[in-house]
Image 1 (tube, rainbow, N blue to C red):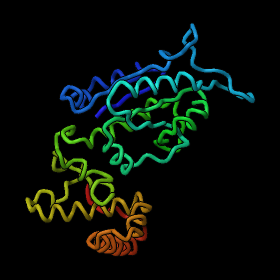
Image 2 (cartoon, rainbow, N blue to C red; image 1 turned 180 degrees about the vertical axis):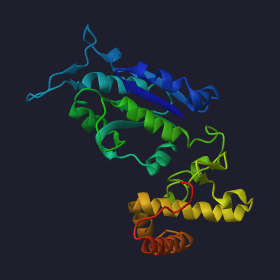
Image 3 (cartoon, helix red, strand yellow; image 1 turned 45 degrees about the horizontal axis):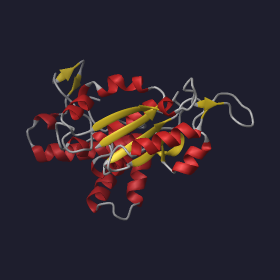
Image 4 (cartoon, helix red, strand yellow; image 1 turned 90 degrees about the vertical axis):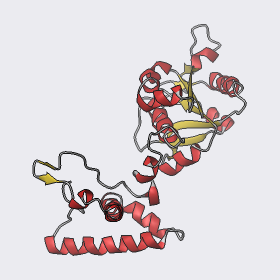
Length: 266
């Protein structure tokens, strides 16, 4: 898969592309990451790409000409023009579902804004997919672009060492939060690893993990549970599990008089 990142600060991606999983994926030919600076398409002798906003106001706005020219030239550098993505706090929320959808693309072009953002004609004329990584504002689109790239690339076969990892983690199987994880030591500061994880009974461990995933999601993201239950395609197995965990949660709350954790040692 190929990523083309259009930004005013390509140097911000130096560590991102030269470390850990991203670096190994590039070395193995699973992904390509190409960085482009909008200034290369500026017709200004000082490579200026921004100007004051019409109507007044603070800050500067990135001009449309260098963006349109950059996108056209970069799209022509590969056989597939790719899907254009604009990182903006005004976009649709970026979710795991979006990551899965984008992972099906052969190429993504990511537009990273700065200052007061892009001239509106960039959105109107190029019609990009607009995505937001959260209800907050960053200094630019570079950090959000890294989030999108990492979430997408780890779904590409071979990028992660364990092919099942994307399924078992949060928002994987059934769209639940991930179950709690433990490692050595067996007991730390009085907090013990749940006995079931030491039992060697793989079926029991799998049941525990699914129950814990439901419990944790109910506690931390009840909106996800409601969304799952509202989906007519929600598996009956999951519906029964949710109802069972809800009953247990209600029972514990009545006994203790307040919310309780769904597992030991956390």
